[in-house]
Figure 1: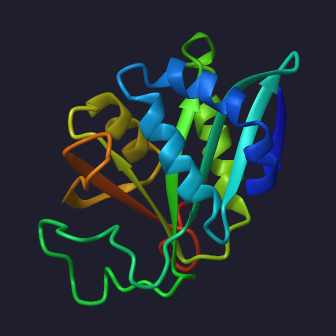
Figure 2 (figure 1 turned 120 degrees about the vertical axis):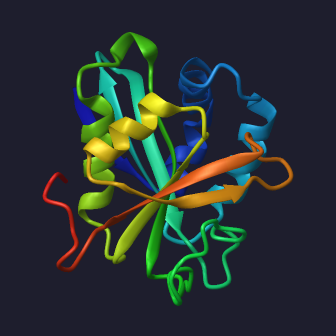
Length: 180
């Protein structure tokens, strides 16, 4: 298995390949929404992706970008967080947007390896990700990996879900997980 770190330009050139894996990993989601979301995401500063290939074929990926100051990520978070929890500077929190592994390659530790690779070199103090509330197995997996549930937020217009459960993990400092 070959692991590779990519910036937004490299992903832009390989977007068709990403779309194939995304469609396999998330069959209930609309590919048009994915394309629109990716156009916005690839323009964000600090975007980074990590891919895994086997025999030259893309088997999985993970990517994200830092939350900007004034981000809407935490809007409507319930239960209400402690003061300062949602304050973003553009360098405080890295948002993991998609983690996808082809169904034929699941159960081999690739998702954990991809996520560890993506977060290992990040300078932000924490990372966050969102899951659909009905994805109980996925949420249990994240909790096993050290992520903690931060609450639920409403999905916005054009989002894949009406609600999202948000998770966070410390990347630096005394709360940083040893599981990464």
